[in-house]
Length: 173
Image 1 (cartoon, one colour):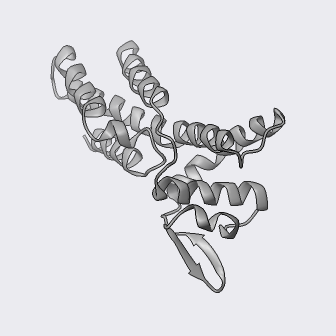
Image 2: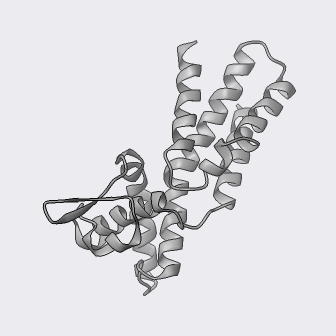
């Protein structure tokens, strides 16, 4: 159990520490929807449409063009961050507000799922009889030295999907 917790903490802390600002259309489209939900209680991103090219115009309203799963997973963490930012007297629509809410939303959705996937990979390797040190190095190489790492530090679905695949693989055995 200690080894599993250690793997989770290593991965989660790495993903949480390295945060990429929301400069891509992919992240901004999801953040636009989160801001619209929080500020206006709507799924229309009309107010934020100029923020991203990943949008669709339907019946006079702009919508995020991204699949909603990660946005919905990020909603509780985003809401908590938005509440704290506003409690401090700041706006979530400032550059600092966007950065803070994006960071917490990413940690509260993609990062922890990817880190759990790393734990599942480590447990799977141990279950297959791989020595602990080899399993640890393999897991850290895959989850810190490959695409899982950068994708777990942005509000993309890729890191979470990789984590879910690793968890599913562990559960199948």
